[in-house]
Image (cartoon, rainbow, N blue to C red):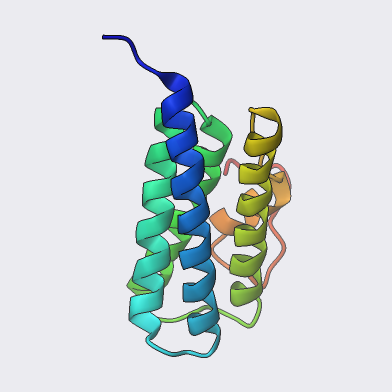
Length: 137
């Protein structure tokens, strides 16, 4: 029995679209501070699922970016709050970039690479401070 990569890529794109929509709804709820823990958990879970699915179909850039978002959500879960005024903006930018990456897969097959500055910001401990260039992250 052979691995039908095209079938799994279609499934990935269908699921990714649903996940992006759910993440967007959770971010909007987070923006209003409605059900904070539930919204954070939802985004964390969906980022984790996106990472796993992307890795399965060889979309390593999407997997890496989703992993950074997942890690960021874990920090927020542990802390129990957003850190600084810019963190919500960072999360919206990350979701928008993830949507662009998925759209590039739909259009051309390979994902566009993750924006290095956004990836560094997700990995940064302080969202209100610009990431330091040349860091190991």
